[in-house]
Image (cartoon, rainbow, N blue to C red):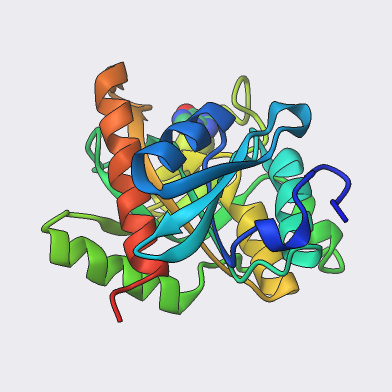
Length: 236
Ligand code: HPA
């Protein structure tokens, strides 16, 4: 039986899921990185694919933008399909010393969203990545000679017109990537018991008015996808 928002049969979703926000990026990544690719979700056009990487099953599916959309898919992936690892691959705005195109491995994700508080008695959750996945991603990046930075991220609910002081607060706390999903993913990982990691490419620098060109974004996506697969499914 399918879940409410995912039409796949239970056996069609792998234990490991790569989760870009954009469903077309899910299609691109699946065909670029996996073999024997089959589409397993098309509901609301939130495309999902399952294929094989080094002979192991992997699902790549879009999660949409923001915590509410991401949380719907992630909750159903965890509860209904029993997914064990979810790796977000996405872009973020850069703050402070980070460079355009740099890959961030988000160790933690602070947020202005209420999502985790709603499920944590109103308290502040230290939303953090799964340590084993984070360490595996660090190792995989080092093995590739890829200078990935273990970093603190911030997930905002406001792409436009948020707190005008936000960048100053982020700099003050040495948070160098801003996006919209990681804190929700990490909170759900902690509550539902799956391993979560967000791998983020700095696509825009928010203080320097620098923006990554489209071709570089595609290459960044491929790099993150390869890193995510190497971290989640290391060589035996
Ligand atoms: N803000 C929020 N989310 C983002 C950004 C940003 O500047 N860049 C990429 N995702």
